[in-house]
Length: 165
Image (cartoon, rainbow, N blue to C red; front, side):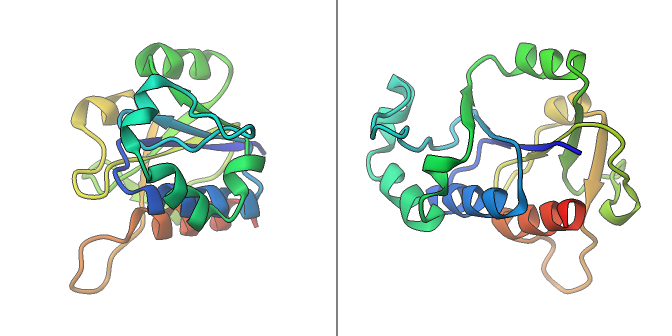
């Protein structure tokens, strides 16, 4: 089963690099980046868009934590998110938001039945209500301690290795 990841409004370049590395080791098809998520250099060392130039040292931070996965993983910056999500759905992808929400179910009860795009949002605010409404399904990782959430790169690892191992 094909799995891809969309990172929307992730602010930390370290998290982005870590997710690239995890996605590579888990066998993810592609990593998509949207909103203000920092972008890595392409395989020729070029910044992919004028948007990315504002990140300065972010590309070095991504490279440091990705350990080269940003050069080998298929990835793309998505500038027109709504139309892209609709196209992905037409192409048979199920869009699954990973978010704590009243509508979310335990990720362990979700079954991969078709190509799946797992969406991860901002480290503090998560995914917006408007974005959540575009998801076909919402899953969450149950929290048992005092803290209410995991680091986004840790949550990504849990989800990917659960479904791809």
